Every structure is written in C-alpha cells, then in structure tokens.
Image (cartoon, rainbow, N blue to C red; front, side):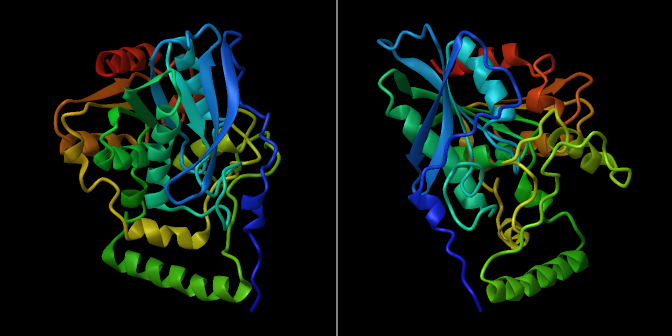
Length: 328
C-alpha cells in the first residue's frame, strides 16, 4: 500500500491561470485573490471591479460559482465581467480541489464544502472596505446553482440568490431505481478498496487535454452538449477536464442539498433556465418547493450551456434589475 503526498499542492501558491474563454472588457479590472474557507482550504478567485469604481463608497457585491467541474476562467468570469460593468463588485472562484484552489486529493466533489465555498466568498467580499455587507448576493451556474442555494439556506448574509441552468447534483446522483441505486453504491464502495490500495482515488477525465474539432459520434443528448462546450474551443480549459473522483458520488447520494429550500424566504430567489434546457426540471422543482419571493424566468430558444457564456442569451438586464431591487 502506498500513499501519495497531495498536500504539497496546498503549501505552494501556483501561478494564476491566464487562460480565459472570454475577453476582459476594457473598462473592467480583474485581480487574482486568495482566501480561506471555514475548513482552512485556500480558495483562488478573480475579483472583478469597474476601473472607475468609487472605492470611497459602499457597493453591492456578488459571488459567482462555476458549472459542476468548471472553473473561474469560464462561465463565472463571463458573468463577473459583465456585472462589474454594471456597478457590482464580483468574485468568480475555483471550487476547492479544483483549478488553482487548494484541497487534496484533487478533483474531489463535496456537497458540503462546495456549498461552504459560497459562504467563504461572502466572507471575503464582506471584508473589502468598499463592499456593503448587507448587499451581497450569489449566482450559481449549473451544479453550483444547487450549492449556492444550499449555502443560502443557512447563510443569512446572502440577501438574494440567482441560479442559471440549475442542476441539483444530489438529486441527479439519485436518479435511478432502488435496485440500480443499490448496485451503484456497491460499485462505488468496491472502488474504495482499490483507491485505498493505490493510495489515491480514481479520477477519469471526461474531456480531452487539447480541444477537439468535433463531437465524438458516440455521444448523444446532454453528453454531446457538454462536450461541445468543455471539449471544444468554446469552453475548453486545462483546469476543467470534467468529472470528479469516482467515489465522490457517494457523498452526493447521501446528501440532500435543498432539503431546507423553503427557509431561504423571505430572501428572494431568481431561477433562470433555457426554454430547451435538459436541466429545466431542476429549476421547476426548486420553484415548486421554495417559498415567496421567487421567480422562474425562461430564456426563449436557449439550451443548458447557452447560460454558461452566451452573452446574447444570458438575461443580464434581468439579473441586474433583480439584484438592484433586492440588494438595497
């Protein structure tokens, strides 16, 4: 039995990535920042502000989380870049165990820690002298939509929450018959023996290290859609090759991210989903279970990944007005 020292990753600060899937607006400043979450794991994030922001005043702020297995240089940065132009102080972060954030082993998924990452972002923003602590909101894209709402259930400092192409990863991990779910648990626990003997957990990337020119013929539906973003030039990033350690799924199966969704009220929730998104049902379920104030906003002619980075389909005016109305 052998053990690999992953902790060296936490003892050194890696050079921040300069590979982004979008162009930074000339009127926006991007600054690399680091801070710890409640578990002592260092998070790497990008802080976006307008270059002409008056830092002698207090401003509203937003924490933006990435799609599941995504990083700050992708969709979160697109949102932060746009909202900074509209007067918000915004951070886009790498989840723990991902990208340039700390945590070991790499590529582990933890619903508790991934939810905590949003609260850690609130911690950081609230310490900036030009941020109003009473006006902090969140945006969760895809899987981080579930994590952001999970954080908001207990973190009353989050005054307003937006999700885009929401996926509840804890619910998604249990989409199977009882027989199938039991078989999956057995398979994952057999993998634990292998991981322990190897001294590290199995991790199988879903996307190529180099952007592909076309979608593999064997992929269909949602898998083909995800590949068109993560596996090709549009959204490819070396820190976001898809998937998590195989046994990470056990935590999601055993967790209910949104068990207390009704407790976010009276703070408002805005759920944004594409008209043709395969993930629509998750937003509909949250809308049904949450209490007022809440809104489900449907983007015409949009699919799931359109709300990652398509600035012509992401309803930024709607998001801006929601936050300006509720962060005041």
